[in-house]
Image (cartoon, rainbow, N blue to C red; front, side):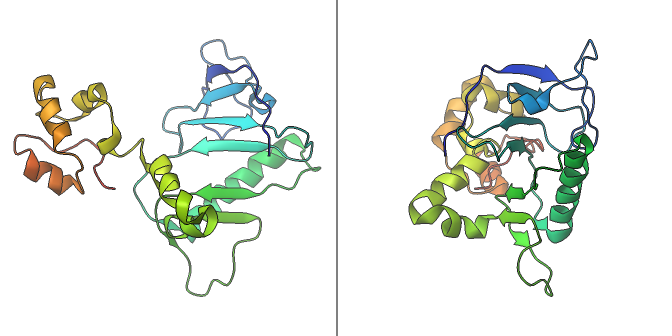
Length: 208
């Protein structure tokens, strides 16, 4: 499937999508045309995910893709999937999109915890979780998918400047020593190898 590529601009939203729609831009409060496919939207503060944008397939007029990114370390229960799908449906039909059938696809690096009595998948929802990567991406690309989803939150793959800003108790001159000890298989492994380090901040982890 080919995707139409358009010039992109970046907008900072005042509101939290998908909890609020339409969105207005900082600082002039103009309406953000996020459905145009040409806008990367930085979501409002405290929103459940940080950035999203829309893409439209080329030569196919019946599909639109809205891609969103959300970081967290908790397992994915059915209740969370239902919550995300409900928000998507609510905001999708806000603009009278009756000609489309929304489908929620969730890619997560966390295990998907289904209800014991659940049979099959939720209607209109596909959850691709860590344990199913091989099923959906194949044995060759499943590991690449795992790295793609976790690389931004896994400190083993961060650049030197980012490590310096996150790792308390490690000065810039010592970052090289920290990098030489990669990989770290857990936060405890990191502390054991670097006794002078303080507790890692919540926006980073060495879990792989």
